[in-house]
Image (cartoon, rainbow, N blue to C red):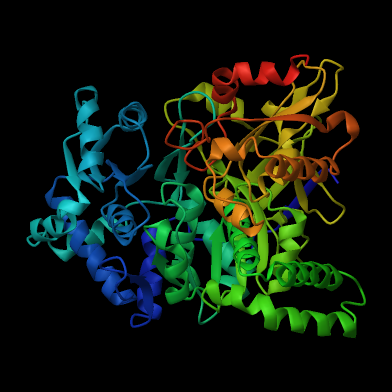
Amino acid sequence: MDESRVALRVEVDPDHNLNDLLAARVTSTPDKVVIEHKAQAGGPWIPLTAREFDAEIVAVAKGLVAYGVEPGDHVAIMARTRYEWTLLDWATWAVGAVPVPVYETSSAEQVQWILADSDVSVVFVETTEHAATVAEVRPDLPTLRAVHTIDDGAIDDLVAAGTGVPDEEIARRRGLARLSDVATIIYTSGTTGRPKGAELTHGNFYELTANTVADLAVVVADPNARTLLFLPLAHVFARFIEVLCVPAGAVLGHAPDTRTLMEDLATFRPTFILAVPRVFEKVYNGAEQKAAIGGKGAIFQRAAKTSIVYSRALSTPRGPSPWLRLQHKVADVLVLRRLRAALGGQARWAISGGAPLGERLGHFYRGLGLHVLEGYGLTETTAPATVNRPDNIKIGTVGLPMPGTSVRIAADGEVEVRGIPVFRGYRNNDAATAEALEDGWFRTGDLGELDSDGYLTITGRKKEIIVTSAGKNVAPAVLEDRLRAHPLISQVVVVGDQRPFIGALVTLDPEGVPGWLAAHGKPAMSLAEAAKDPDVLASLDKAVEKANLAVSRAESIRKIRILDTDLTIDNGYLTPKFSVRRGVVLKDFAADVDALYARD
């Protein structure tokens, strides 16, 4: 199959905008909780009904009007995922302005480019450190009028400033935008070059969320549905969920500090979770190591294997045998139910995106009772272009197109997308827009395949294809994703372009290594010492052997080299969505790449 399409489920009035989504929620269930947040870390969850949340939005929106924010102005938000982010987002829409998210980890150069390219007039930052970053480049931001700091009381100041603004002015402004108008400009965190500002419309979010609710109602529109956001709201994935919860009737929570994520999950008790594969890998590896340290490693391994086998049997016509069902119940009592409890005890669904989850983990979590709906999308597709459906999950694929969306495979294998989620273009960059869009089809840059049912599988990144000196084309993502699942490994960069064989640069996981050492009865050691330890090296070799099973011999990894530093967002080797900046890594670690191919 070369093209897959799913028909639109819900049509939307073109004169509507995102404010109408919230208005419908307030009208239909004014006293039902829509948001839960914490006033301080470790404190209780504070519920806000739809009516109360709307009142807070109006109060902040009045402050924006008092500060001189006009319809069409661009307002930047630079903060972690927290309640105030969502409050400012909806208040900015309420005054007819356009929010521009900025990652809180952005450098001064990145901040300058985004704020200048988008002509931002007002910036809300989280901390004084963020304010200092903006101040560093302020002379190069001619349209910027003011910077307000959330931690210094910016929200209270807004509310106080807006007391004289009439309700009618907010009501008037809320009705100004149409579906075709820009709702936000999200700058891609791209692995090369300057970020491009993707202009996403009210229609992109409105139509996509309304249709997602129709297709995933059992997940997001259950009467008790609730989810906890911990991914960055500066990224389109979390932003989409922020909007989705409104028409779905779900309760939204925020977890600003990932260090207390497990505690927040346990107390918030989400029914569905959204995360990237690395989170699912960390949860699995952490549980495995904790069991091993407690002398229950063998029990965990048996339970995990049973969970995977049980899930695979669910996909067969006959289903699990009575004996397998019994084994699964025992595994659940001994291990699996504890993992469910760690996630809050209510999570039945998860939505995973950003990278392939992997068949093994997909089956493990389904056997656990957490059904992972793997999906695929980009900033330019307002997050999901495809997703697995609850009634037909094909583990290993990223599912069917969203309603109102078409996916096709070009002659060179590139995935192309058309329909309601596709952005309208890049801000101030007609050349990039023309390159990315043709006849409404968005060229994703990813390679993929469609099966006979129209389910999409991503096989690699077009620009990252490695061509060995023997002329063999190799997609590095398959090997990298499999290796990265190992508890010792943090990041992997497969190399071999114009080289005689495929190799890999590997970094050790500072969080995973201590647990692995303890679980294997080894003394504590530094990462540098672990990189030379025979048992660590043997475990890495086995991981490479397992990863190589997914590819032909010509595509397999022959040698690895452990780098002496991890690849992180802070040191510039990862984008804010944890994608490797491959070009930067290959440039800075060129000597390590050469060492892989040096003759002994």
